[in-house]
Image (tube, rainbow, N blue to C red; front, side, top):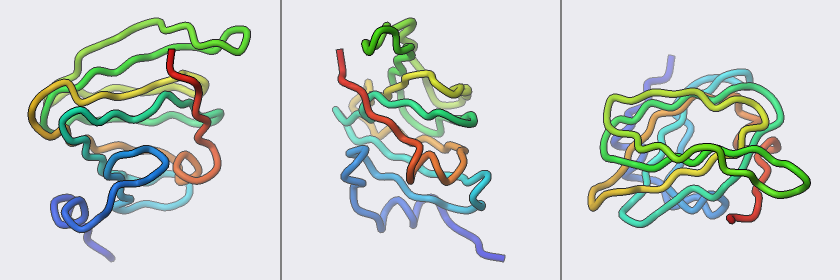
Length: 129
């Protein structure tokens, strides 16, 4: 058994160039992994979607904005913009375009679950509109 500590993992990782935030896989397997995500003031995860499987998110610290949309005629139709705070959790479904933004002066820390493919070959970025 391997034990990962979210604090030491996030403190010892560089920003992921694809999503522009700190992102580290803590544990799991190909079917389901647990990820820690950290967004500094002003940082955001660009709009993207996944073709298969759900993602779940748990807001550990901070305040953020989550935008959810769908693709229609090769454009994103934004359906909702929601504020999320420490203690909130939610699910992103296959095909839902989503982006996250830190909406506070403090660090936004998120714990997420997703198949490993979501960080490797099933992450499709879209133009931000």
